[in-house]
Image 1 (tube, rainbow, N blue to C red):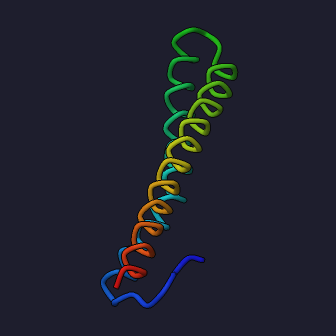
Image 2: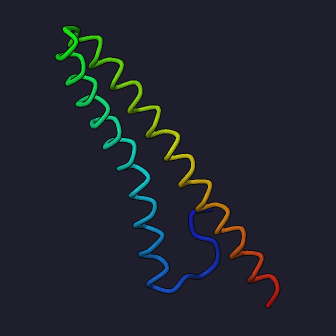
Image 3: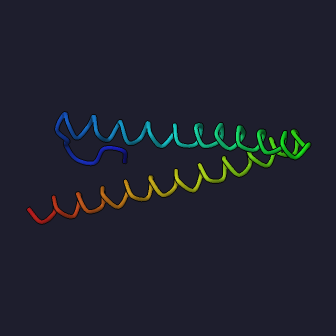
Length: 87
C-alpha cells in the first residue's frame, strides 16, 4: 500500500522523504512543547507541571500534524491511482 504501481526514482525518493518527515514531526513537536512548558513552568514556579503540560500539548500538536500529512499523502495517492486508471 505504500507504493502503488511503478514510480520513477525521483518519485520514490520524494515519497520516502515525506514519510520520514511524518515521524520527525511528532518527535520535534514533543521536544519543543516540553522546552516551552519547562520554561513557562520555571517562570511560574511549577517546573514539573509546566514540563508535563508542555509535553502533552506538544505531542498532541505533533499527532494532529502527523495525521494531516498522512491524509494529504493518501489523497495524493488516490488521485494518482485514478489518473493511472484513465490511461
